[in-house]
Length: 171
Image: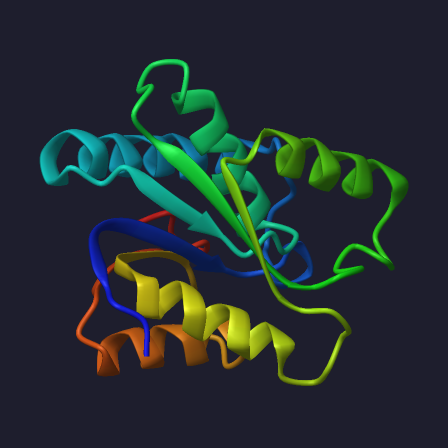
């Protein structure tokens, strides 16, 4: 069992195909504006300095990029990328692969859960992130799936959870 640290926050959320908007749409921009606001609140109000992204398409990637942008303003923050296995990006588009590699090249720390893909490597990654973090920041609309399981686990572990609903854009 890993020790939870008060200055850690991890991200969990829906993949683009489960969202009712496209990246760079008006709704996406509203959600990311709220994301930035809450990350700043975590940094300034709760001394959160370490952020963990599972590096999946959608919310994880968007939040990782947000942390990298905010590092210019807050030099004390760091980005950890928790990779479920080698080749996580194997079936992604070339532009998504490039984005993934770019983020990894700027990360402060990369943790790889295991060498090869197995049916539970994503779950292991999610448990690792929640175990290590006091805060969990999610983009979730109550759909069943990996995000729901991660939030359920975070509730069991009594983590502090922030959820943005992608349908209403509300916290």
